[in-house]
Length: 129
Image (cartoon, rainbow, N blue to C red; front, side, top):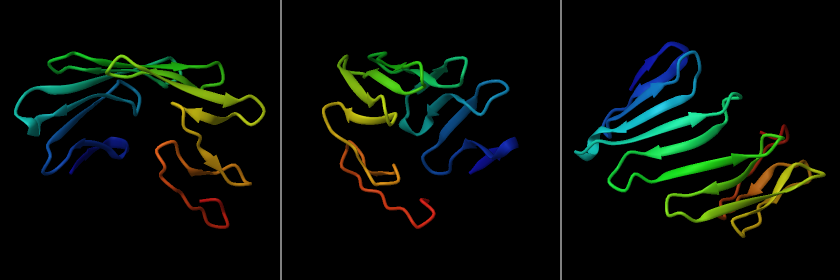
């Protein structure tokens, strides 16, 4: 693997992903999937607070994913590549997601995510790490 300043990944071994970063940030601006034989790339755009707003897939169908952010910085909606929307419902009192695309994430008493909307489970130690 090749790294540049601030330990940012530039290339990977084997799969041949190449990374470009937005100027003066650690935001990934582009990933090129050079191991696939064609020019598959994804360009990423961010808002003025460095939150992801767009993933532009430069493949045959030229599909995109658009990320909508609420005033508190939470993802509220994603328009995915197939054109459908994934809604994110947020509890105004806890600022946690209560529903993502029809599934309900679960949290422990300390507010840690213990099961995400895909069913992946997470565990934390006594320091909530």
